[in-house]
Image 1 (cartoon, rainbow, N blue to C red):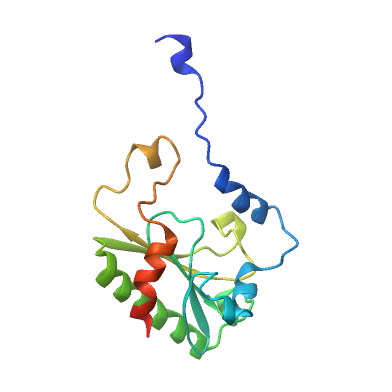
Image 2 (image 1 turned 90 degrees about the horizontal axis):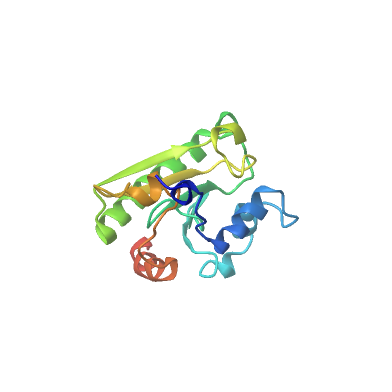
Amino acid sequence: MESRDMERQNLWAPWRMEYIQRLSGSDDGCFLCNYYAQPESDDKNFVLFRSEHCFVTFNRFPYNNGHLLVAPNEHIGDMDTFSDECMLDLFKSVRKCKQILTKAIKPHGFNVGINIGRCAGAGLPGHLHIHIVPRWDGDTNFMAVCGQTDVVSQSMQELYNKLKPMCD
């Protein structure tokens, strides 16, 4: 193998800078708390629906098309402090998201998960949230495995416009 074949290749993804800056502690505070406090900006913030104890928004840095976040209305970092009513509302919202995504984009499966603490992968450890990631057979390909890059096949705005009417 030639030496140039062994050189590291760059894959430019400048849109990831917003994510990197958020992880480094931006002064804007918690984006989930900001979204909760701005119901008039739900369309801009891709908030699909709100319930008594939580709300659902798109992950702006998705692993896959349709990657949603279910977050409690309160800034709570650990599920030990959730009320039973909040826990039930969170998981009812997860179920509703799964049903809506199944109808709209027909995934073959889902990953549903919670990252508690930064060492466990939580990008926002102070405001616990549940990830819902639609999956399709074969969606883990060379880009994700070798290139450490996710390919999202639909714009968030297009999918938001498709899902929003289904949330009522």
